Image (tube, rainbow, N blue to C red):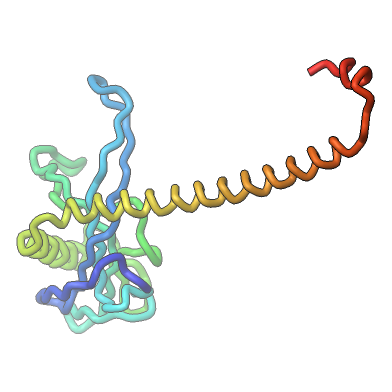
Amino acid sequence: MKTPTVPVAMETQYGTLYIVVAAADEYSYHDTERGNVTDLRPVLWVCSDREFGDVRKSQSWTLRKRAYGVHYRLYREDRRHLLGADGMPMDVWHRSGYQPYEGKFRTDNGGEVTFGTATYNALWNAVTEAADTFATRNPGWEALSRYLLHDANATREDGKGAAARQEAAACDAEADKHRVQRDGTRVPDTLLATIQY
């Protein structure tokens, strides 16, 4: 799969994790003081497969002699000052809403690793440590993520504008054709005066 930036290999205790900067997510919500707000959440895309393919079919991480695959989109938002439902401080890294190929941690038979298990926690800790290291080594990655979002949006809107201009040109040509046909009807001026626009 084509990635938005060049993958960077990060070594973890379970295997290599490939990280790319992806387009930021737009997160909309209502704030009691600011009203309706849309924030941009810079995103990292992490995968145990260098090609960022379907990790349900290829696992390259090993934990307790079992193979696992990793495929997540993450955003960074420090929530350690908040407590989760379990009473524990929340994380700095969070899973993005969209996960390619159904994302997550996958076992060697393609099944999903259950959230909250020791295996899940060990794999998640390795992913977040690699993401922290990547963020430290690549200052400005968040700005690049926002840039990618704005660039994708601009490209999409340019495409819409080109399509609209093309449609408008076709409509103008059709209108010109009808004007020529209209002017060729030779209706007397006295009758043209009766038209109400």
